[in-house]
Length: 88
Image (cartoon, rainbow, N blue to C red; front, side):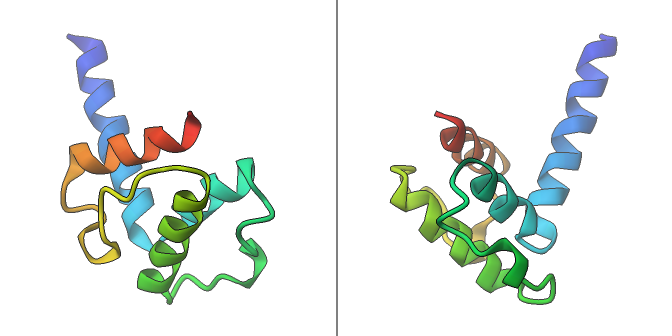
């Protein structure tokens, strides 16, 4: 029961991070594939562009596009599935 509470809180936090400005998505991809994203050039105020860039970079490493940038964060389970694909 205790773990379930923490799991939900962590999931909520991750969803918040990945939908806030798109930088978390780009940072995750940049960590594994730094040649795909010029992370230093990204600006937090360009949320939609950052998410689009992250999705485009992810597709280059074989992650299927499950979500559009506009829908990113709306479908929580799809978003978690999408993010987990980056690790594969």
